[in-house]
Image 1 (cartoon, rainbow, N blue to C red):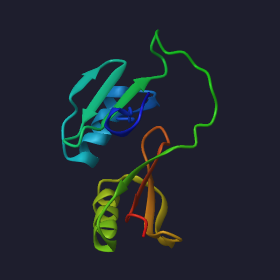
Image 2: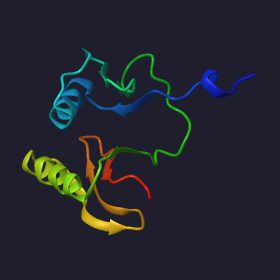
Image 3: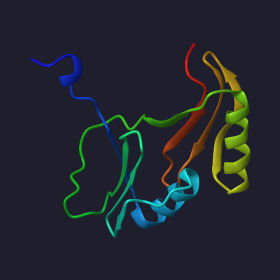
Image 4: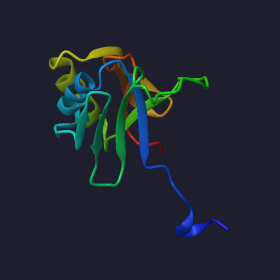
Length: 128
């Protein structure tokens, strides 16, 4: 029986990308941290909080295409509107593609950037 502390929780997000080393350079600039590993078909980042981001080549021989959806976002929850705007300015200065500039949504101030493969990266404050 699962429950309480024994309940498994997700701790890895995989994004399928064209060029993992190039994507790793992009995320290294955003995270201000080098990747934990970079291979021709896979790159990985680790956070101090136990979360991992994997960048897996959609051209890798062990990649199997299937499923549907592809409507996910990576989201950065920051403490306040000042941090939302500061990240927007920093990423904009880095040349990151911005899909939605800062605007107020039902949950507060937010913006959406795009990585080189078109994955959405949202920055916002926590709900509430």
